[in-house]
Amino acid sequence: MRNIWIVARRELGALFVQPIAYVFAMAITLITGLLFAAQISFPLFQGGPPPNVAQIISTFTFLTIFAAPAITMRLLAEEQQTGTIELLMTLPVTDLQVVLGKFLAAFLFYMTIVALTVIYPVILLRFGNPDIGPMVTTYLGALLWGAALLSIGLLASALSENQINAFIIAFGIILLLYLTLIPAELFSVGPTLATILSELSLQNHLNSFFDGLITAKDVLYYLAVSAISLFAAARVLESRRWR
Amino acid sequence: MDEQNGDVMIAADELTKRYGNFPAIESISFTCRRGEIVGFLGPNGAGKTTTMRILTGYMPPSSGAAYIAGYNTLTESLQARQQLGYLPETVPLYPEMSVEGYLAFAGQLRRVPNLWERIDEVIAAVDLEARAGSYIGQLSKGLRQRVGLAQAMLHDPEVLILDEPTIGLDPRQVVEVRELIKELGQRHTILLSTHILSEVEQLCDRVIMIIDGRIWDDRSMAEFVGSAAGSELRLQLAAPSRDTGRVLSSLVGVTEVTVQPEGFYRVGFDGSDSTRAAIASTAVNASWGLLELTVEKPSLETVFLERLREAEFSQTLAAVEEEE
Image (tube, rainbow over all chains, first blue to last red; front, side, top):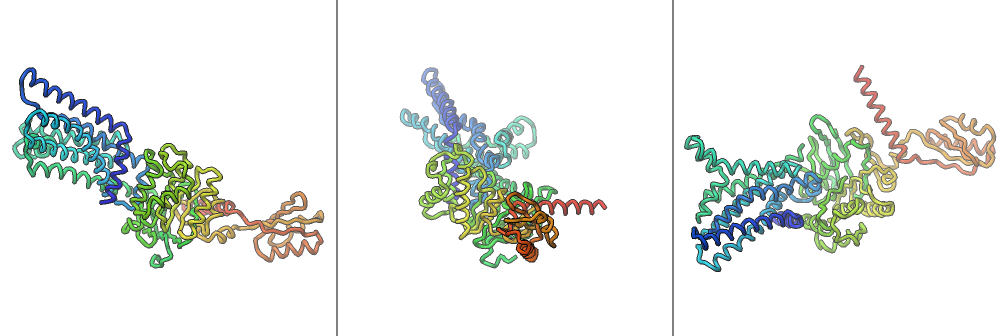
């Protein structure tokens, strides 16, 4: 456990000295900020639905489809490319600890960006009387979603020495899992396959969180995607040494 | 393999590593004892780095086993790594970390007690006090090399594996780092790979020479240097006669005589004591005024190149035999 934290802390240092951290923070606050401003001004002038945190977070989670692979692409790929992995792997730390440490760093980084959006519910709570329950489940969903995407990104980063390749692999896997809903809805694939495809979908499991529901099925889905990806990443890292 | 013996700190047991079908090393076996500084020699591509990577546990062997302080590098990897300090050839370090920050990172993973005091000690030992807070990415190659060395010795490991530790250093630092290695070698076991043969001559108790992935020689430094096919005598005569050169070369065991100015002669001979005695008594009996008679020890470089030629010759021979 301590080793995981030592690796994570080093990685956080590396993440925050890079401009990418601030670019993301800016882009995300800008886009969600514009959205929030539109949300509160339209009902004021034209009438319409009241401001809704789930809508902002849903845009936010869509943006992380691009952001998550960008955050994770260098985590293992860079170590392999520059050779720093050689010293890391001769320190008394296991492959799984390295992977979990790097995941933890990426997740804490993600949480920092998520935390920037908490300003919107705080404003709503200050000036209105919204339902707190759905806000909490929305944020829980966003965190689970982030864990799954970052884990996939980390697996891709273990698979490649090249950061760009790592990004493309991660983006490809995420997009594939994101879009399994489309064939299930558009084509007559039969009820069994339709169920399988929609249950596989990354996006499908997020909706109930936005509606204020926490279901074991959805929580388990994201945890399983994360666990499988992280475990696979550790195995890939181990196997690279055998070549 | 006698890894039960507590004194054996590095043990390689029939290590073989293949990259695809290409055998990088084949059946490498050797042991290093506590307090030994062992020079690991061989031409580029001979398999030195591969062997070192297997010993550090970075890479598993295709077959065979390696032990550090008695721990199997594969099955007891973490214990083995704890006993080991490693300086890789290219010293890969995180450029965005400070020198202190990096040492703290490595030291925390290694559970070094009184870490910050120890960091100050090793930074002083490699003479990096002025750059302790600098980012590694801003350091020159020589300075990075010293950070790598500081990292390797940070936890005071039983075993140090150093791949070309003085490369990229300026002459003064080279001397300092050699002193450091010598000092470390009194209590630790050091496996040192380098192309600088004078360094090996100064530092090492033993030489392991590896050619084409196989151990070609494994002997103490004295034996290795003494294994040269011939030796040379330096002779200074006050009153040599005109036929001195001819008389000397007619002696049994003398292979070559070179006449040099100021009465100096270089005499190549078979290395035996009787030949040496014969040369001395001949010079005295002929009243040449013997001023000096010194055995010139062959340098490690001479022996190294000689062994390399032997290896090449035996390979050519094997190839010819194969064709026939």
